[in-house]
Image 1 (tube, rainbow over the protein chains, first blue to last red):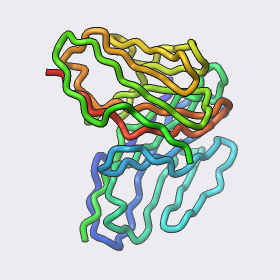
Image 2 (image 1 turned 180 degrees about the horizontal axis):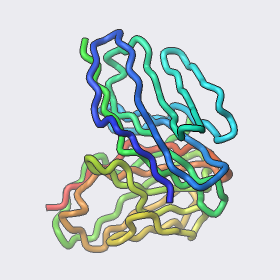
Image 3 (image 1 turned 180 degrees about the vertical axis):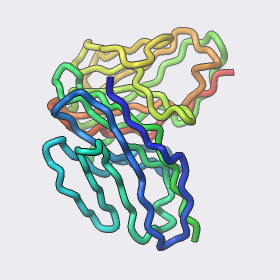
Image 4 (image 1 turned 45 degrees about the vertical axis):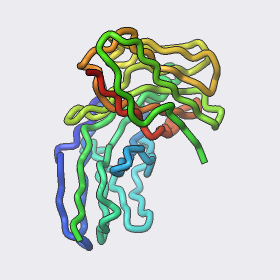
Length: 117
Length: 113
């Protein structure tokens, strides 16, 4: 069975600090996809990034960066120079890669990030 | 932009009532999903569908049923609402094929009293 663990339930930082969110996953599939979603106070989950299991390159998008390490089954997310608008709950998710699975996602428990001014 | 809409943001129902939660997507996505979100438990999949009239149970289908008569619409039904079904319900859709991201609606916060 697949599993996603986000050990940090809540992180509080002061604006402009960097914050790293940990995500560890378990799967028996050799092909899989990993995702990060942001859930602001409004409630709607917003897709941030997708990474497939064959692509271990790190990615940077503005102040966001992601570090995928297959050897440790981790897909960590860093927000650089955090801003108040980054305050949200962030979810890591894992997708089975078979057609029959209908692209089901297994979510971690989420990490609440609070950025104080 | 993908748009997923849900019929209500907030809903209050009484125990035993039949409850319908509606979800509509406008991107011609084949896959649609219903999740519930509870504090400390993350998002848990209730049901999903990858074609009209097709449905598959997720991780917690007990007490729920679904209907997908049209490609763009996926309904979640609580046959007899109970207080333990008080939760945030999130609908999502995605394209068919491996690894496509899911797009979520704004959620419906359901309170059963």
